[in-house]
Length: 386
Image (tube, rainbow, N blue to C red; front, side, top):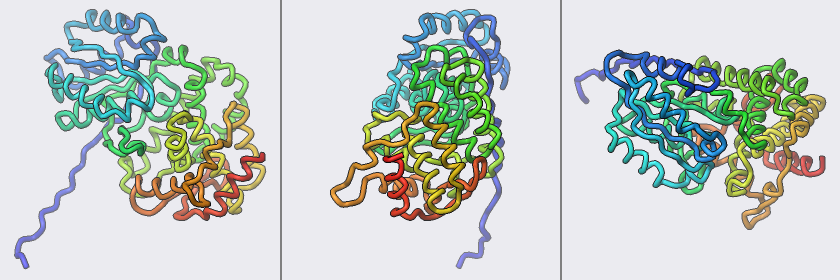
């Protein structure tokens, strides 16, 4: 036995999770990026390395030239060390060479912990660049500029990043709050329809677990959202982002050390569906089906009334989401569909007890630690026929 007492000190590290909304962030007359980059200390010019989603660059001609002009306009404060285009989509998260390339760029350009790495693009770009920034030099300040509704409303405003390993989504990653998130709402104007709709699903999700009034607002604005009217889309993005940031900041578990993950409602099945479809299904499409499964499961178990369940399914379909996929029937050689493996993979990914969020009412959730697989399969069978 040692006579020495254990040495224990609490370490408290304050984080400021900041999300800004603007339009035309790299217009020389818009000072937001420059002011944020120069907000911590004065003196040295800030070196900045930028990565842009190829599809975003193609959809926004002149974007890279505009960035170069912006940095030249602010050359007394900022140094542009390069703009690099990266392919978007889930494929980038499956390619380890991309992260190695970013590490090399950081080393070659002398990017240090007082410099910035900027990611402009969809969720896959934000995840991959964010992971590289969070691990190079044990953490470089990084900006996120999400360019999709999904990124601006959900994935891009959080504290997680990651890449895939052995076809398991986000198997490797970190919790690393970005230096700041800038949602340039103007960039949403060029989104393909599917990427515009993907963010709608995360708004429905957060409304179901936190805010019945927001759910009614989405119901009331279905037509405007289907027409992609900017005012409706922008309000949906803002309200959804506000809910996500508020939960992360006030839940007492921003780095998910516990087992409760309400922001992953509908995601246990969604992650498996993305894997089964080899990402043919977008994240939003997969989450829509996952929400539908867990909604009917909540009803089948007597937790959620039938009227509310039908409202949820109706809203998903009114926003042109399918609530069933043939991938749900794909089997692993036995009588059990692969989709059920998603439960154990979800538990493994999160750690601890299996914890699934279900619904009591629209806007009110609770957690369970086991799922009756017969009821899950019955819920899926119902979706097939509804």
